[in-house]
Length: 519
Image (cartoon, rainbow, N blue to C red; front, side, top):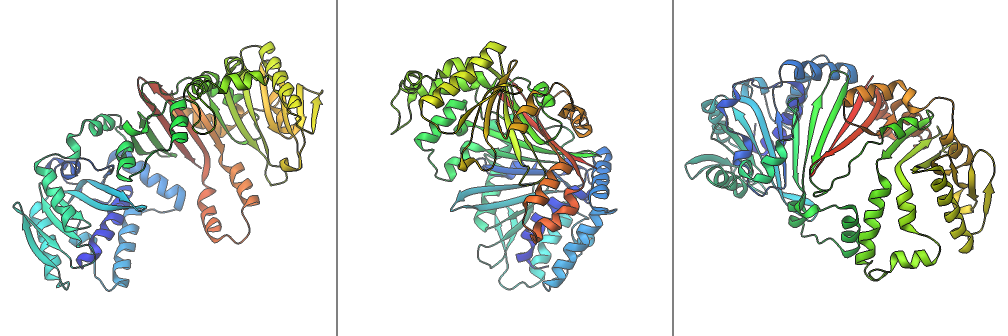
């Protein structure tokens, strides 16, 4: 197998094989942590288990069977890789050439993000037999790939391919290392002897939040990535981020893949919101939304966050548009008291209904502190619109208090703003809007998928839910006929029972779980 094929094959194969449980299965202590030879400032790092065992392996096999009807996922992937290599004129036997030395853990890093791409790519895989791993490296030269050369750097032997970048392969410190270029490989050797990612406080702190059941994790240094891209956040965007309490330049995030027998879980943790991440529990509001909803999202304590954001924007102004300390004052003079509106709002939810373009509708639901506040808020908005001379405003008299706005720009249905009890609803279409006030009938909490999602999330409050079957029906109606990619994907989309997102915060850390339920 020529060296020019080694890196792309391995970056594809071994990341795929982690799902299949097809690894060497040796003692991971025989190899170093792949992060220990990763340059310290690498902004993106992926680690993964090549040969999962026990419950994780059983769950992966169950998912492969349920989703794609595959009994031997590892064997299928290895077979396809060998077939692909043969089609390119290369003979590759994974079982004989790689499996004898392949360990349990692997890592992949990306760096130097510019011109829309990462210019530095490297990977490392633990080996339970470094001698056999070196034999594999030596065979790359014996294969007589034209221009490949054996070299040494700081006591580490390696092979360099004569291609556009100089793809490089070598074995050291209980690891087999691959790099997109010789320079990157040398940087990996230097990292093993000096500063490396495994010793970075930001990395170790972020990885402490990885669940034990994780099969793969992606670490992102958000601030480092912004810096490498040479990007400067423009003034308006910075003002918006400040209003949300988001501090991307110092932030990191980790996403972890956790396979379960009947669902796939993605856990995400980040300190992107600084010392005041969003908190609260809006799952009760989410569950109370109409059972006909295709999908819904809810946010806790929205009014509080909205007020904090408006205050920050008011203090700093909007560059080139609104001077500091003028936003609130200007709107208040126009009859809109942003602070009063924000103080009256608690949790907020959004839902979408329909199974075709004709029936597509939805609404925004806000819970006020009291019935009086809900009615007054709707009245104030209506007063502002009338003063502004907005045409097509009609009073709503049935089922709630409020008004509707008809305009050709809105299409065939009006936008409705209404209040009933302590709930304020802004919706598209009268029926979709009034359904948010229903006192009887099914809600999302009655949906069997919703109940399963609650169980899968455990104690994490649910913030979003999508009914898999309803979403697929809507997509089938909206996607133009003949879309090959969508038609091919449907056989797998039909397997999705639900998608749910839960979130919570602790200290300066925000965490979220995305669960995809498999039928």
